Amino acid sequence: TWAYQSGKLSLHGHGAQIDLNTLLETVAKFGEDGFAFLQKMRIKKVRERPRFHKDLAKATWELSNLTTQLVTAVASLSKDMPSLLLRAFVLSKSSTGPPYNYATESEAQDFQKAFASVKSLEVALEDASQVERAAIALDFAPNVGFLEMMCACPQEAKEPSPDAWFHLFPHFRKLHRLALSDLVMTNARLGEAVEKELSAATGLTWLELGGLTTGSNSVHLARAASQLNLGKLVFCRTDGGSAGAFLKELEANPPKSLTKLWIMDNNLGPQRGQVLPQLLQKLPNLGELDIGHNQLGDELGKKLATALQGSNIRLQDYQVGGNDFSKETKRKMFAGRAVHLMRLKLERIRRKNQNGPDAA
Image 1: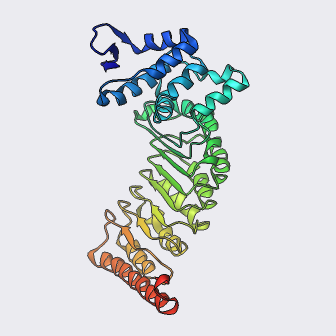
Image 2: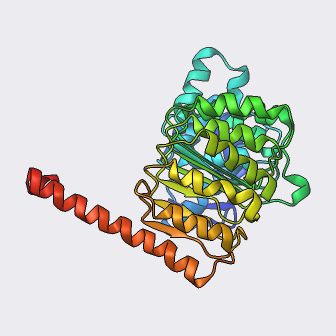
């Protein structure tokens, strides 16, 4: 058994140490025997194992002579290792790429099999240039259905190249959940491309766009969203102009499957937010709404309160703070929710009486 501490391995009870890069280079040098040795390695202390696996994943992509066989051997060390490797690849500052780009077809298939168990990629980018690496990661992880990607970086480093976006967009088609945050997507060349690929994501039920700088491309994002069978849609923390254009397009072609709509923190104002009452009346399945912190003003609030009392409104939960609504306006809004909840209760009672207890 081995001990692991501060990036160094040592045989338990012995003083000699070896760093992870040396371990991996030695394993690769000895081929099948080295891979077998790696498989049999055991970290004695349970609390040291997660750190060892995380650091080993990072060290793997730092090797200059990376092979398909070594990657697949590392990926097989634990059930979490493929996900750790995938995330480490995206965040790696090394120029090393996946060896399947220049492997035989058989090796390429083996490489993809190593990542077949990965169902999600959730990563906080350190620089927008890593969007390209995320797209490459999705090339060799064919079964990822949930992509969550944010850019935890300075404003000047939030804009990926158009080519990186073009590489990423086709992967949207296979997703059931997509969350993008704090990235820039203003290049005019991107609009039609993202609309085409995103609207083809027929299995997507959750779309979350937060803190994006989209410019006029917000219209293309809304058009794509309108064509999907979405359950939850989030468009928040952006500028009022982009959010207003997004909502206007959404109102023209509402995604009627929506059950949750979060459009908070967009600084819409009363002019850009004026489509909201009409939009809500066109979303018959909407049960949850967040329009908080949009400075909508009390006059628009009154119109919203009236809309929320409509017979086709099914809202059960909504957040409206940060809009300068008066107490009376808020009272009317929440009275609308009470009316709807009463309708639901009466409807359940009616079905129960008609069809028996199982129908309730």
